[in-house]
Structure formats: C-alpha cells, structure tokens
Length: 487
Ligand code: URP
Ligand code: ZN
Ligand code: ZN
Image (cartoon, rainbow, N blue to C red):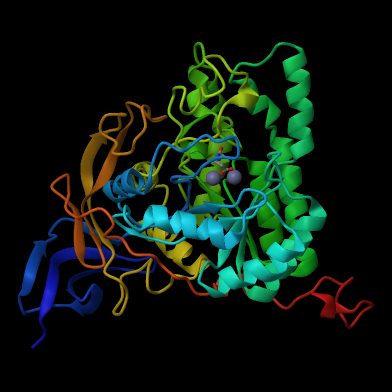
C-alpha cells in the first residue's frame, strides 16, 4: 500500500514525447507512480479537463542583477520567482554576473545569499564571465563547474563585458576541458559602436535608433564568428536570444555540419517589432533590448526555427528595468538610445504566450511546447531527468494547464515588480491553474501558497549536451597536420 502526499487524478499528462491520461502519485517531492492509482493521497487534485505539463524551466533571466553601470533589475528573487511561478515556471536559471576584478566565488556567494531567503521555486545559476584572465579561466572557473555551476555566458559586445576572439578561444577551450555549456551573446561590438556614433552625430538618439545600431548584420556576423571559434575547438555552444533569420541560418548551417551548436529565442522576437520602439516620446525605451525586435518577416522566421527544431530553448531573457529613473530612464528623462538600460520583462508571459500563439493557433504541438519550455533546458544545462519531465523519480514539478483560460495581460495583473509590460492588453489563451514544485503546491486559485525562501538551490551535472563531438576541423585533426593535444 503506497502512501502518497499528493495524487493528481484524471488529467492528460503531456511530456516532450507523449500524451497519456493517467494519475500521478507524489511522495517526498518526487513522482513515484504513474498510471491508475487506487489509494488516496493526503492531498488530492482532480485535473479532469486539464493538461498536466512539466513545470517550465526559464534558462535565461536576470534577477536581482546589478549592471556594471550600477542599475539594478526591478525584480529580486522573491518577486521574480513568484512571477515565474504564476506563469507555469518551476525552475529558474538566472545569472551570477561577474564584474571585472571580482572573483567568481565571491560573485556566486553573493547571488546565493540573495536567492536563498527569497526564491519560492528551485534555482541554479549560470555565471557571466567578463574577466577572462588566466586565473579566472584556469583555476576559478573549473572550481565553480565542479561545484555544479556547469554553464556560463560570455559577451561579444558591451564595453564592460565583451571578450575578444582570443579570450573567447581561451574560454571555449576551458569549457571543452570541463564539459560546461557556453552561452554567447553574439553581436559585433564595433559595428554597433560605429553606427551608434554616426546616428548620434546626426542627432538621432530616439529609442527607435537602438534597432538601427543593433543591425541584423552585426548579429549575423558575430553569430558566424562565434560558431567558427567553437568549431575550431569542437566546443558545444548555445547562441542566446536570437532575433533574426540571418543569425538563425548560421545556427542551422552549423547544425547541418554536425556541430553541437544550439539556439535560444525569446518572446520579444515573436511578439514585438521595431515599430514598438517607435512610440511617442521616450515610450519606445520600454522595448529596447539587445538584439532588438525586428520586423514581421523576422517573427515568422523565428517561429519557423521553433517549429522545425533549429531552436533548442525558449527563454524569457527577463531583464526588468522600470520605466522610471531607477531603470530605463536612469541616465535622465530623455536619454539617447545608447544610454537606455537594455532588456524587457517576460518571466510570467513566456509560457502562456507561446502556448496561446503556438499550441492554441496550431503552429506547434504540445510536445514541442514542453520540449522548448522545459525538457530541452533541463538537458542543455545538466538538470535532466530530475527536472523538465514527468517521469518516475523526477522532481514533482508540474503545471496544470487550462487550455481554455483567457487572461488579458496588463502590468497590474502580472506579478513581477515592473511598472509596465511590453505585452499590455494582449489576451493569452491557456494558463496554468495550479503550479507544483517538488510536490508543494505553489500556486492555486490565483494565490501564492508557499513561503519566501522555500525554493532550493540546484547543483547541476555537467551537461551531456556540452560533450565535444570528437570531430576536429582538419587544421587541428592530429591525423592531418597539427597537434590537437593543445586543447
Ligand atoms: O537586452 C537584453 N537582452 N538585456 C539583457 C542582457 C542580455 O544581454 O541578455
Ligand atoms: Zn545577452
Ligand atoms: Zn539576457
């Protein structure tokens, strides 16, 4: 006779592979039985008419993160995790961002101290590495990877973050040795800088010019270059927040060559366009993010990449800066576009908007939705099968979805700490009604049911996805003319 803490009955479970009408028995925070369950649980949920999905994993978000210019994101780990949970997400992978001169240990300790007393759902961290000195890459980074922070982001742009190609090669070589996942922000810094200078000389400082400066060519070129560097060293790599067809095609070409190159895109590239940056006064600042939203043809191309499997993950890139002096307007009431904090919020709407416009409108099936919002992130970042699926032995991270529930998205009804949402007034059909994390009911009847700090830190495995292919390019292949031992 089993004793269950919780039994979910009569729902249709949908994973990345299959849909099955079955009950789910949960004990000690884990899924222990799938199928028909006769015994009663301490707690029972009737999921008749609902979809039972793995809780989402948001693998790209900026929470309680201080930018190098000192601007703080509007969400801390409490408001950020609550907002994520209301949107069906049960795991967060935000960044622990290194500013140059800081040790990685110090950075991670600081972010841990912020998250532990506040997060209501489970969380891990990716590092952001802005200092690629030998000490950081050779000693500190391997120690952090050993401790379970098995992925990190590097940048090809932003003055305070960018690494040059030489530094990127050093980082890629370390990632290869350690089997860590490299995430890369691919935009050509000098192209952006050059166009920005010309625009400002002509007095063109309005928010819409942000999209001109962050040209598609800058994204395409950097994506191509980043892939070339990764190919040289046979290092798996994920290109984050892809906005355009040209960059997506670089990823597709690499995948066709058999490289382990992965892509990520985000809601802003499906649901916003450059026209949103061209609003009255400074209002376009609310839509400034990098890369910027493009045009409707790009939106369609990004949809295609999600549907055909070119993209591996769909993340929010939640980077919440309020539309006031604490955030978007920190440089003054009318800053030029290059002084506007980059980023848009999206933790809570990530899954509902993709469900509504993707599954609801017949663009993708539920299995692809689950894969993009949960399973692939778990696989890519060393959390699978603990997270990202509904299987015996997995954490009971589950979102019960009502595919018919319609909600109008407004700044008031989103639970983050923002004063606007870029998706104001949109109606998303299909929302989670009950959200469960490790068997704990986190959200029910539109209410938060758990205490702050009840989420747990996730020490992650080295991802299988970060294992090199073993196929070196001819220049490095020892069978041809070069000694591969140096990597
Ligand atoms: O504009 C964006 N995406 N801001 C967040 C930082 C980043 O590069 O992801
Ligand atoms: Zn980025
Ligand atoms: Zn980001």
